[in-house]
Image (cartoon, rainbow, N blue to C red; front, side):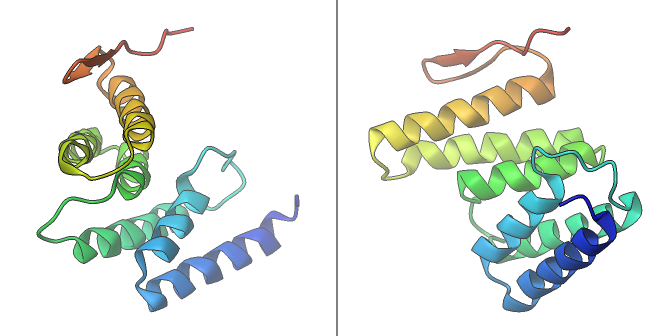
Length: 142
């Protein structure tokens, strides 16, 4: 779909629906649609970041006293990183790594989530990061 106006209207409605439902799954999915790994050059920047802020704050409010799930942490961290608050993004990723330490997940799933968190953390920090016995170098600069 290349009709950016129609796409933006649908995406904005999806974000409003997610906020109304106040469900982590909906909020995270809406945030990923706004700050995932797509080309966003055609979307209105101010509106995109305004929606991203509201979605991120809603997700964080759902987890005021506990750590976010790794998936939620990645989505919220991506928003903060893109909005210029890299310190907050790094903090969220580090919290997610600590959460994984105590999570009762299958070892394969835990390893996959840890790898994704570590790769993103290394990218945001621009240096090698380690957690336990796992270390990840920063991505190579072109």
